[in-house]
Structure formats: C-alpha cells, structure tokens
Image 1 (cartoon, rainbow, N blue to C red):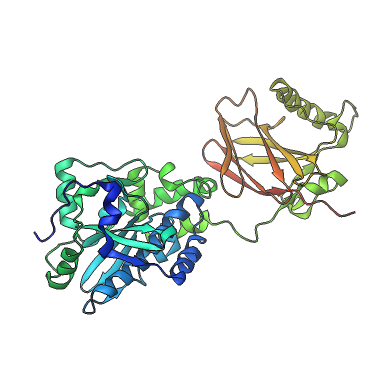
Image 2: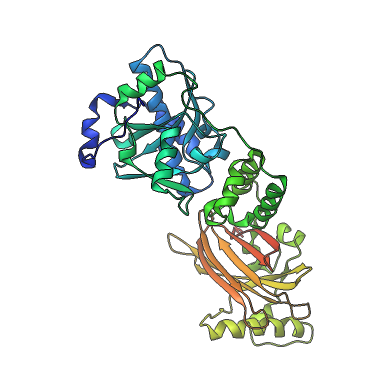
Length: 433
C-alpha cells in the first residue's frame, strides 16, 4: 500500500543516486565487524558476515541521523550470534519501534540479490520489513538501497514462482525493492504494528530433528570445510534452521578445537612414535619395509605393504628410501581397513622447507572387507582430497599433499557411509638434535 517497487534503474549509476542516504562508517565499526568475522569457521562465509555486520552498524547510524523518535535495537540481531551468522549472512531480529527488521547487504550493485531463504521461510527469522544496505567498505560508506515488506515478497513469490536456489537463497530482483528511504521511515513511524501479519511458528517434528542429527554426525568431518547447503537438502535445511540446538551443535562441530592433539611425523625419522600416535594405536613401519630387505619377523607386514607400494608405483608414485611411515587399523562392524601414513622431507634448506605426506587406505590383510570406504584430506582452510571406493576388493585410495613446516593435515575415513574415523592432524616438528 505505502511501499511501491522501484522502476527500472541504471544500476551502474545507482550509488551516485543515493547520496542523501549515505552514511560514513567509523573505525570502531570495522573493528567490531572484523572480530565477528574471525569467529566464523568457514572462510568463504567470513566476508559475507563481515559485510553484513558493517551494514547493521551503518544502518543504525543512518537511522539515528534521520530520526529521533524511533527506537532501534540491534544487539539481539542474529548476525552477532556466530552460530547463526555461520549459516545465514543476514541480520534478523533487529527491532525498530514495534517492527521486526531484517537487514540485507550487498557490496555491488546488481539486477538481482542473493538472499538467504531462511529470512522469509523460517518463523524465527521472518521480519515485517527487509532493508537492503549497500556497503562500500573501501570508501568507508554504506547507503540505503531499498526495502520490501513480508507480504509483498510473498505476493511476488507466488506470482513469479520464485524457487529456492541450491545454495539456500532466493534471487530477488532489485526492481522488487522500494528505493525511497522516506517511504520506509514513514512506514516505521505511522504504520500500525499489525498491518503486516507474520506467520506463527510451527513445531518441527521430533523425528525429523533426530534423523537430521544422525546425518550431521556422519557428515561432521566435512562441516569444517564445506557449507551445509553443499551437504544437505533444502528440506533438511529448513529443519536445521528451525532448531537452535542443531544450529549450535553444527557451529561447535565446524569450529576446530585450538587444543587439538597433533600426530608428529617428525619423530618417525628417529624411529620413534609420539605420544598421541601411540595412544591411538599407530604402529611404526619397520625400516626394511621401505627397501628390498626381507626378514621373517616383518614378512607379513612387508608383504601387505608391498601390495600397497606396487599399486602406488603403477600409478606413478615413488616412495624414496628416506621415507618413514606408520599404520593404524580401523575396525568397524562393517569391516576393517588399514590406514598408512608415509612421510619424507622434500626440502629442508630452502627458505620454505617442505615435506610430503602420503596417505594410503586399503583393506586389512586379515580382516573382513567392508562394502565401501571414503578417504578425505583437508588442511586448515579447505578440502584437498575426497574420493570413495565402491569395490573394495580391488585397489586402494591414496592422497599426496605437500606442506610447509608448521602446516597440518586432517584425515577422515568413512566406512560404508556409516562409520566415521576422524584422525588428529598430521604435522612435522623436527627435533633440534
């Protein structure tokens, strides 16, 4: 009624047309946004959360510069809760007077904006008004860009048949937004609080929550490196975003522990095993296993490893005689696998010394063979390797990664899509002796 959509605009000139709606960002705004972004586990999400935090702080300044009769409360906004911000880079549950505001941000002027579907579909996040702020952080500026109310969005959604994208967003045209800031202020001052009806929350079925909890547990190793929308369906996303306990559980699972133990492969070069590896049941590979020597004591182990070596050599992987390694048996109800970790130094004299970690995963020479298994290797920021083997009677899975001194690698093994083994990170710390 009061809010009308924006006519077609020249988006390359839009920012210049918003001079009257610009607000300058202050140093403390950047500091607060940066602190928040550091609490987000997924690096890909940090930038969006950073921009959204700047948008909230800029919107607060913008509103206070233009009115003294409207109370604004942003402390309870979802963006300041890392567990929620990690999933939804929008600021829900802002209060302006009697209205709920959801603040959206963009750094570039486009014909369409990607908006998390949860802000329209999840009752805990739904708002009376959705306000878009353009953030030009390199210019220390934000500017009001447009708004739409909840009922108008759903009218558009129904008439246009808008669908949720695979990354859990709606693509909303800029022309759906009203670019008149004075109209928004008039709405906030004069509109009755009940003029825009919001839906009531409906309870999520306990069985859906339980099933999703089990699925998330199986996917736990991937949550530190991949967005939930890469792993879950949209239906599962609805369940997740409607359950605070699951949201908090996912955040804790995606956040690496700062005190995580380390398997130090550097001790292997002295034919020793560090405490962490010992406690987890790792066994050093006997030195002759890396040469052509034979002995009765190590025949069984060497024959098993020679099969792995032969398979690797067929794929062009040569293990030098200076390499050292260890293995661990992974036992499950579905079967037993043997995980080999082999390492050698590539360069110790250059400015950037490097080391090689070779991970090989195959069936146990004496145990029952599972139907399938999967090998995943990650560093601190991203997934480096992910492969599955469906026919476990043939072949192995292996991954090679190169690290600098101090770099760590995480290995996860999944058997039959059910049994997950998360290995503490491998690192190389050489003794000074």
